[in-house]
Structures are given as structure tokens and as C-alpha cells.
Image 1 (tube, helix red, strand yellow):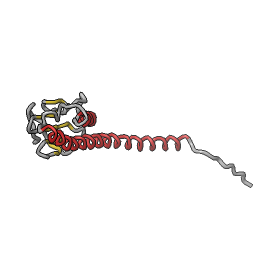
Image 2: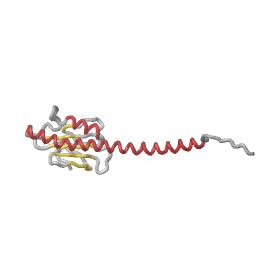
Image 3: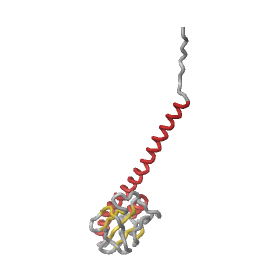
Image 4: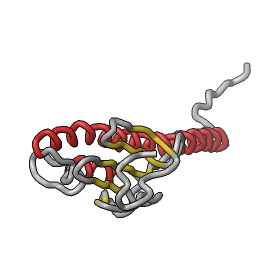
Length: 155
């Protein structure tokens, strides 16, 4: 009779093929996570900018002026929102600058007694490079930011 021996285990080639397939799948997943991370950061910055509209109106009701929307500190200020916007947008210096022009690497907020506006560069430019909100109630993604140091309207 024939004697059969059972060989158990995988060959080296089979193991290398499986490891290569896992490596390819992992690279694909990691590439997808990068774009999801930037989209999430943009969504957070947009949410903070939209929240700033409500906070600015609270400031206006209390002071009858928008003068401190972009620079004020304290319990009713927009300081925490400005920090969140700078952290989550494509702002390289992590500060929303008061009285400045918006660039692809710098968020800005301009205010006057009767109006205010904020614009921040987005990480993912789908729909426009900047997200802007102002005292007219507008907020949206657009091609340009605030173009002068006294610009208090989006668009």
C-alpha cells in the first residue's frame, strides 16, 4: 500500500502573496483616510464659521456694534471659534488675523461698527478655495476670500 503523509502549513510563496495583497489593500485604505481627514477638518471649520454668525449677533445685541467680533476676548467673544477655525482650516500660522486680506494660507476676520466678515482657506478646495460668512447672514464656499483689510462682505 501507499503511505500518505499529511503536510500541513503554507509555502513561502503563498505567504508572500498574501502579505503583498494585504499591503496593497492597506495602502489604498490609508490614501482614502487622508482625504477623509481633510474633509472632516473642513466641515469642522465651516461649522465654527457658521456658529460665529450667532455669536456675532449676541455681541451686537449687547454692544450695538460689531467692533469686537474679530478681536474681542472674554466669555461672550468669538475667541474660541476663531481658534477652532484657524486650527481646522488651511491657515498655516493658526491665527485668524483681524483686519487682513484672506490668502490661501491665512484666514482673516474684518469688522466695523455696522458689519463683519470672516473667510478661511479650505483644505479641500471642492466648491471653492475659501469658506466665508458675514453679517448679512451669508455663509458659503467661494472662489475668493476677503480682498481688502476693510472688506466686511463675502463675495
